[in-house]
Length: 310
Image (tube, rainbow, N blue to C red; front, side):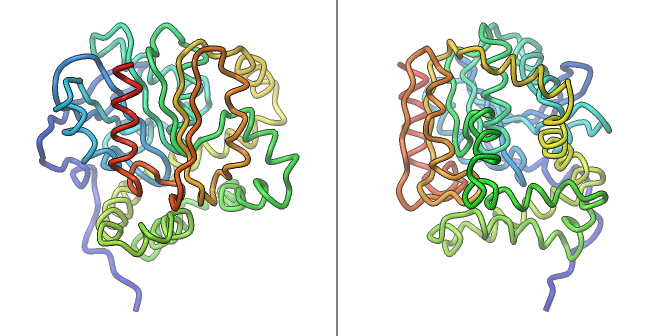
């Protein structure tokens, strides 16, 4: 029997209490919901799809206890952040994070991004290198690696990208939100590693993400970034983006990837280091799917702290 939604959903569903502080920060012409804990050098966490800031709720106190200012943000269009109808191109998403770092009174930050947030993290480090002190990317190839693999690996990355290709269908956001956003949980099950999906934490995360995707306009906004990524291939806007992304990264980069990732294949992510001239480390995580920050939390926490302190 299909689970029924428990009532109307609004932004209050992501304002969960805990050992952190909820704030709203203006940056790049929009208002962003941020959740922070601790004091010290800034470590900024960017969630992926179909997530929101809650993806990092167990990471924030641990990073804060290690002596850092740990901040998780709802990206443009997600959670309790603004949901404008435009601005989901790579340029604007990167400018959002650059503006957020400055708006929080910081000169630079360690940026940690996973999935779609990892793609944004790559772009921020490329377009605004002075603001990114250290970069940690989870489950996300360099954008140019992903773009090349979709065309060059039809049985691999192109097939793995089929769900994102469906996002191009007009009004597909209604598919995401019907039946209490059951499609969100289906994506988590498809992309997550078997051990995590069968574990005790899965149901709680699925419930949080299903609720947040039903916030008015959130599903539409979440898909717009994917729509721009595909449509920009045929536009001058996208050609310029590719040319800019070809500049080598000068930010020390740690790249963690699940060996069982079925959304961004490991063979697609491998080789992203060719775009980094600074120190670059690659680590493949066994028995982990597309959500390393949830599936191998302690390993990821240790690696984030090691890289941030180094």
